[in-house]
Length: 491
Image (cartoon, rainbow, N blue to C red; front, side, top):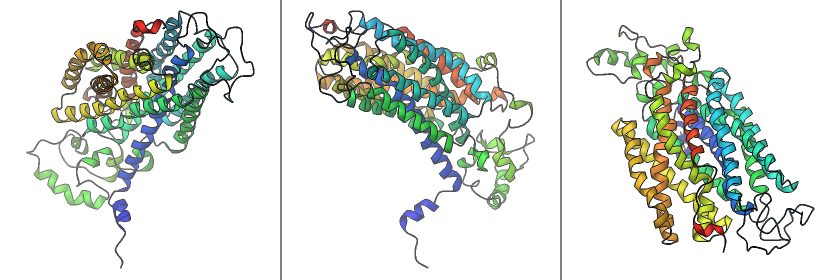
């Protein structure tokens, strides 16, 4: 018999369960990356909505650098059009108006997040997440349609941001709950640290996509990301599997020991080993495979039925009940400050770079992605360290302490030149996004499956929503009017 090709040998070396876990890992990664991809355009387009122009000089061009762009609205020069940008953001109070757009989104997101977790515990994740992605795609595109329909009403853009903020709250509790259903606590920090890089990947793609059209047709900077997130919503509906038991996959517990892999025969072969190792402390997750009296009782049904999947424990936890879980309030307050800094960079960094380094909107958007590149490494580093030390809080505290002086000198150092700006963006991204990623993923999953819940699997979405919702409250403290360098006031 001919030897199997190397590629086929690689495929069959993994079990069916492992392939399904890898699929869910990649799918949820892409789903939430698309959410962040649709949030980024507003920060890129700010430099186009308001341009720094000379006092009384006005030109008939309006939406970018080329007056002959094929995507221009029918009217060439409305009464409220100037070369300073898109009305009403072309006035001197543009910082307040642009900040109000951010504030509208973040306020709606924070309020909606508290409700989203409670609702998400009571609805199928696949349907709930699909609805949120389709609606988010629609409202993101609606903002961009303001360009093509020549809409200059400030209220239109504010309402669009509010609605988008509300529907985007469906994403985070859903994907974290789904991923936690498939992966146990072992190496959770590393797994979720890698997985949480979807935030940075989404921001980077959003910056590049929005930046491609920002100077010629900024409406497409919203419509294209909106179409992408809506398309991913359809993918979610067609392919998302909420729990391994839905397709008779083994429990996530089986990943932690080679003795518990694919078949009932392998379980039976290793039963004597369990009796012989009573003197050695068992992994907390492996204890779920033993009865309360310590006697082995392993059978196929126990592999797919997690503790708490029957009886009264199916009742979803209340909001106040989730708050009583040890650590929820403390980590929520910690995220409040970490997310404040992260979202200030998310919404205002491109405009800041435009002001300091005198780059156009497209180049500033591309340079701002370095903060997210640093965030990828920071999230993975935080996960690895917390797994090694088994101390999530200490890891977050250390990185935040190092981030404080880094951010303090960011403004001064970044003015030394482009190279200094690049270095500070990478370092700041790692130190700020590391704790942020750890708290919103591994810590939230740990608390949502805390031992005080006694096996109740219907708390994870609510806990995740409380922590992320409190963090979103912090994001509003940097808005609506951040302080930009003096060079922003014109030339």
